[in-house]
Amino acid sequence: MKDKKVEKLIVAEKARQKKVVNLIASENYVSADVLKALGSESVNKYAEGYAGARYYGGNEVVDQIENLCKERALKLFGLDPKVWAVNVQSLSGSPANVAVYTAVLPLGAKIMGMSLDQGGHLTHGHKASVTGKWWKQIPYGLDKDSELLDYDELLKIAMLEKPDMLVMGYTAYSKIIDWHKMKMVADSAGAHVHVDMSHIAGLVAGGVYPSPFEYADTVMTTTHKTLRGPRSALIFSRIDDRKLYEKIDKAVFPGMQGGPHMNQIAAVAVALGEAAKPDFKKYAKQVVKNTKVLANTLAKKGWRIVSKGTDTHLFLVDTWMNGKGISGKAASDLLEQNGIIVNKNTIPFDVRSPMDPSGIRLGTAAETTRGKKEKDMIKTAEKIDKLLRS
Ligand SMILES: *Cc1c(COP(=O)(O)O)cnc(C)c1O
Image (cartoon, rainbow, N blue to C red; front, side, top):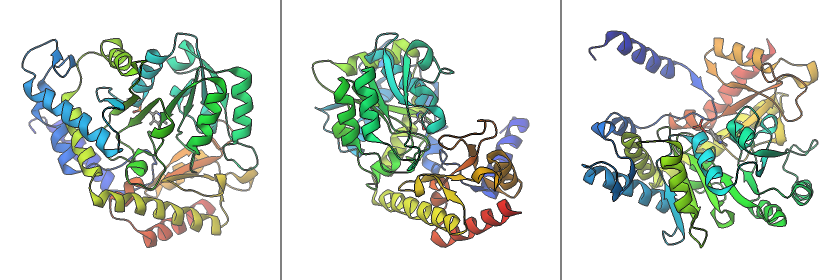
């Protein structure tokens, strides 16, 4: 690069990524091909509108990129293009959720979503997000004893509050969600079913987590977590008389944004192609194996794993343990000083503050991409245990 200042920083960030053990549950490492597509000339193209109906000329090639991306997105999740539509233009997960809500809900409608401190996302109706200002969150959480979803309790809330939409799919829930039971909860209120599978999309694609599509009206996913692509989002919608796909397309453009990032869409297409390969199935399996070993080893050392374990790529550790341990912030700072990157996280029914909560969140999607196996997880768990005890 001619710009030595920026180049130096890019090189430094690359070196940092190489040096650390990365247990951030929402991160991953993209392939060289994904990076190449992101850095390609398609970044130069303005393509407001959708393939075949753009506002500027010169789109004959980027139309093909966008169509290929859509085709691969549907195929990866086994969806019939006559039954499901997909929008690939949303810039990231948060605006994608907002686009779905604006397409489906009138302002002020009720969104039943998990509270942030129990494992939901900001965009599931938290007050700090526009989703909590433009719509009203009906919060739900986990059962206090089991720290699992309590479907009977959810049913009670849905019948009492009659939400217009039920949002499911979380940022810190380590167990399998029973999509069928969640659909029954939504049906009891006549609510729209929106699945936010941002965290688990790669596990669904890899066949190690049940697919939610059968039960959903709309499905949103980010592409940069377990799916291992560039930062972006996909919005799937069921094709029926409601023509939600038309409303969603309009909500994304011109509703929320202008020109799509065509380089990003090209890179998503590459990542979706990679995720369709047999190797990705192996990867997804290894992610879950690694996470279980990491969690089990920490549990054996005496640390409390929230929800008593994991079926996914992540889990929460209660490091505070009612004052017998170490706070989440102190834990994540200490680990970072020793080359292990995690994030502090509230645990369900946390008595401490979000800025210094009772736990940390650990995930293995990134380290598994780097080829780490069970024996590495045992070593990492032992190191974490030793540090947190010091
Ligand atoms: C990460 C995430 C998002 C938001 O994605 P951004 O790309 O960071 O905006 C939304 N929902 C869930 C469940 C997530 O995990």
